[in-house]
Length: 209
Image 1 (cartoon, rainbow, N blue to C red):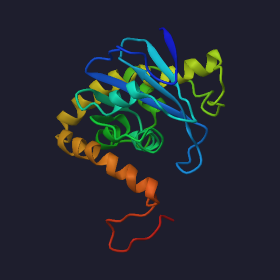
Image 2 (cartoon, one colour; image 1 turned 90 degrees about the vertical axis):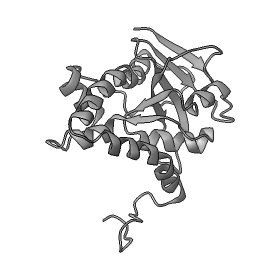
Image 3 (spheres, rainbow, N blue to C red; image 1 turned 180 degrees about the vertical axis):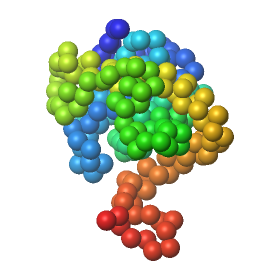
Image 4 (cartoon, rainbow, N blue to C red; image 1 turned 135 degrees about the vertical axis):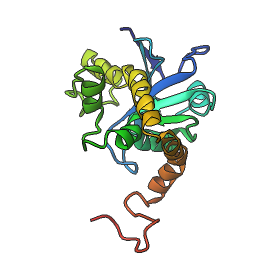
C-alpha cells in the first residue's frame, strides 16, 4: 500500500478510473460546527490519496470536478455525512453515488450492525482498527497512524460494493438502492437546512425522540 498526501487539491491528470472510493475527515460530526479537513480517495488498487484541505478557501478544482463527474461512481460508507460536508464546504453535489451502508441495510437484514468495521470483518475478512477515529485531523502534518487510519476507510470500499451489489441483485433490491443513492443530495440539503432529525414524510412531523 502507498499513501499519497496532497496539499489542498488532487494533482492534475490523476485518473481513478470508472469508480473511486471516497471518505472525509472533519474535526467532529457536526454539520454546523466542524469543517472538512481531509478527503481520502482510492481507485481500489491498494493505494490511497489523501487531500489535506485548505480550510480558509476550499479551492480544489480537480477534486470538485471529480466529485461532480457523473461518469465516475463515488463509493462511500455512510454517504449522508460525506456528501453533506462536501456540499457545504466544497459547494458541489456528488454525482454517481454508491453507499455501502445503505446497501448493507437493504440486504443484511439479519443484523443491525452496518458499520464499516462490521462490514469489512464479515464480508471480506478484514478487521479495521478504529484507534485514530477521534483525532486532530486539522494538524498540518499527519502522523503515520492517522494516515493509515484515513487510508483504511477507502481501501476496501470497492470490494464491499461488488459483494453488496451482488446481494442487491439477488434480493431484487438494486433499483430501490439506486433510488436511495439518487435521493442523497436532497437528503443532505435537508440536513444542512435543519431537517436532519425531522421526518417530513410523516403525517405528524415530530423531531425524533
